[in-house]
Image (cartoon, rainbow, N blue to C red; front, side, top):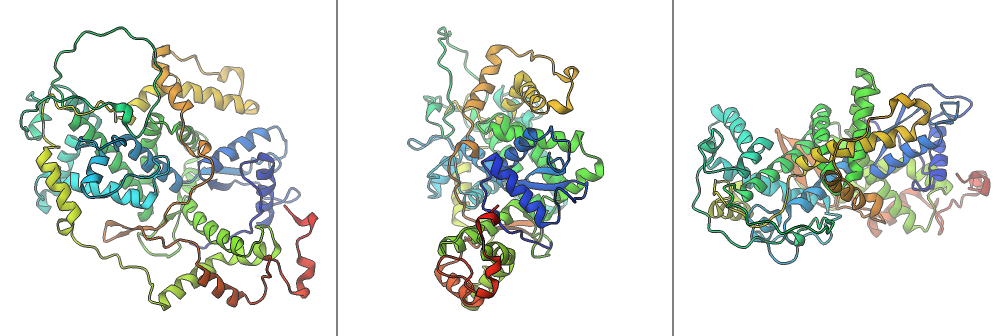
Length: 544
């Protein structure tokens, strides 16, 4: 992929007026002005917050008659990496288990992490992406091996994989696990019968990582329930399978450049986000699906999906998300600006440094290679030789995690975000989004477009309202937090992850070397000192 970096505008995207000025500045840099522009869509994307602000700005400007002034020529895109990161955070919050004390539930992610000496994330609202993904996929691999019991023959691999999928990673499998696991159904015959379960006191889910707020309405004391014949721990393990598999499937699709598979994973995330505290992303994905399915031609739909991924290296299996690469460039630029005490819209920063960030990054990697700090190879040991994998396999075998043990329940966590999301959308969530969308697009709708009222009861709507109020997306988290950056690639058909901070900003030595390359162009305040270019200095009227 060929990258053309635009100069920064120095505007804040969280302020609509400044976002508008910044967009017009970017459009001018590619030759699109109010007096002369191409009447065609220009895809502009970003993370969830950027996407929401673009949609909001278009709603504010929708009554302008000129397509340029109304920003009708802009096609907002929800980028993938921040969406994928938010999903990893959701999986941790849903499946980690107790954060106060140690969980004894072998189905919880926190229990597995503790057994291999991995600490809990310091902030469950901002789980570091690459270390978190590495732990998530390690536990997933161990559980897949334990559920298979033994490595299958290659000739029967496809059939065995299909059977294991239907047994351990589907919604139907979860329903079977919650009911009579001692029965002789076709599903039960595919899972070994474990030892008898001795009932214990159920752990309080109020100590779970998600900490979902429940309304304390008075309830009548219910009579004792009949003993449950289902296996709640097995059902929670199945929920983990489903969520972790979708996360890794999406990561593999991105690295492989498979936008079709990526799109299917995004559809799954619509329901899991709708059933979690990340309800903002439910709206973002609904808007994306409606745009691609209802407002785009088949050709435009494919084109917009293809634009989500880029490949800077030009190698198979090395695709990356557009917003991830932008994050890399932003991080490099911010370190240079901070080091020189400059401003983003300073003339030299804007027109020289920013436009050559890709080359500066290549210099940085070349310097590290020359000093023996080249990137690590993608070679890795076999899973059975890894101490952590051995520990997890022994744990799951001892706990009989993937066996049927009727009546087994350790905590009362509901880990099925997907089913909860379906209920929330059916019981008012979807209607609420439709009404909000029609309200903000009054120019393009008529009274007949108003959706019918929801048929869900007030009790059914409580869960949806709680999720909306307690949303934990970036809109409510304050300052942005940098994630440890690394790389994911598909090598020989396998997803390989390197969580070293290869994308980190330049060190002081790097910055000094950059100054030698750039000469004396940057003064103490980051501005140009060459009198020959004095006419290009930033003045009050040049700031945008």
